[in-house]
Amino acid sequence: MAKYLLLKHYRGGPQPTAEGSIPMEQWAPEEIDAHIAFMDHVADTLRERGEFVDAQALSPEGTFVRYDGEGRPPLTDGPFAESKDLIAGWMMIDVDSTERAHEVAAFLSSAPGPGGRTIKEWIEVRPFLTEPPAIG
Amino acid sequence: MDDLLRTLGPRTLAVLVRRGAEFTAAEDAVQEALLEAARRWPEARPADPAAWLVRVAWRKFLDAVRADEARRRREVTVAVAPPPGATEEHDDTLLLLTRCCHPDLSPASAIALTLRAVGGLTTAQIARAYLVPEATMAQRISRAKRTLAGARFDRLGASATVLHVLYLVFNEGFTGKVDLAEEAIRLTRQLAAAESEPETHGLLALMLLHHARRAARFTGTGELVPLDEQDRSRWDTAMIAEGVEILQRALAQDRHGEYQVQAAIAALHDDAPRAEETDWPQILSWYDELMRLSGASPVVALNRAVAVGQTDGPLAGLRALQEVPDGVPRRDAVAAWLSERAGDTARAAELYVLAARAATSEPERRHLLKRAAHCARGGLPA
Image 1 (cartoon, rainbow over the protein chains, first blue to last red):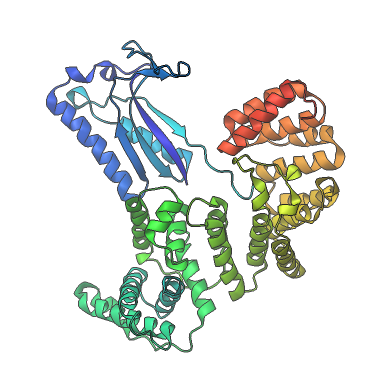
Image 2 (cartoon, each protein chain N blue to C red; image 1 turned 90 degrees about the vertical axis):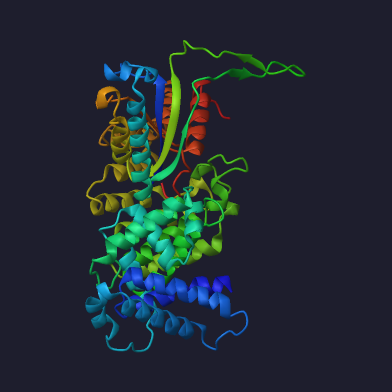
């Protein structure tokens, strides 16, 4: 078993499909409901299979922060609306293989969008680093 | 008390399963019996706790069967099966392991069910060990039980699947409060005590011979220490001696398998007082055997290239590496190491960077990055 992070982006990644490029605020309310319901359905299916670890949504607002020297307040910058890459949320899964992780990501990506058509959203799949096996 | 119940729980379950109880119902009955024991034993512990648990669990199982109208006709035949003879504890454990590692189960489900039903761990403990929510682990276990519900699998004996599941548990190592490596050793010991299959003993030896080096595998800050740099005084010599003895008895049966051969290689490493005294020619000959047994597995071919490098020099190792297809995990790491040995530090630095990018574990990645940095500075002695 290995853990993977499935990242959903507000923006970034490969070219979105025509449906996928329509921002959510332009969808009909029931289309948003259907989309969210599908996401919940994916999570429930994964729970039922014993593959679900965690899922969280992230605000699009973010601030860059760094150390700015002894005794000085942290230096902040942003938010940057023009950022190329914006993570909208993640789902963490624990599955038997990379193939299965890709399958789950594709399932997540089949969520409905405007007009009930699937938006084929790109999902980024990132494996977690682990401890090395005791027998190499 | 908890320890006692943890040992007796799986044993009781094994007895019920051997008597023909359906797995899920048997597990429920044992859980209920354990609860009752936890309630009643602090005041009055029975003279023979094991027999008490079997009696109570069997009664609960029968009650459940009788109560369940839908199952009644099917289960009655089971319930009236001939009464058990003397408890054959080892065979029971074996039967239970065989069930929990049924080939229809995914490895993850088989592992979870084995740890719960045979290891006697709680769902919460297993969940913590695998860093997943308890609900997730509970689902894995109940799915596994549902899969097994209709399966008939009564053959006794250590199938390759059982050994593989134990091997996987061992490799999860130490992840918190529950030490899975020690749990795997404990279960493999039980299995080895029950039967003389040389591969079972080979696996036990393999685990012991690797586990003996555990204290020396990481620095205090969690960095991976390669075998040739480990402080050998920190190896557990008693465990090594035990592993070697088990291995020798297994090899004497002259039915070699992959676990025995891997254990033989581990034993040769453990046997060297200093890294430079490692008997590489003999290790190489075991790798040749392992190649034969594994059907020339690319992973084995990769490790063999390391042995060739140590025996016949790094250039011979690099030639051996040409037989290993690209994309085999850790191929770049081995190529980097051989290049470094061959004095091509520039190439080694590049390869170490590639290997670090593909590393699947944090300690391995850190180690490879440090090697890359070292080689990029000309590879002079650290």
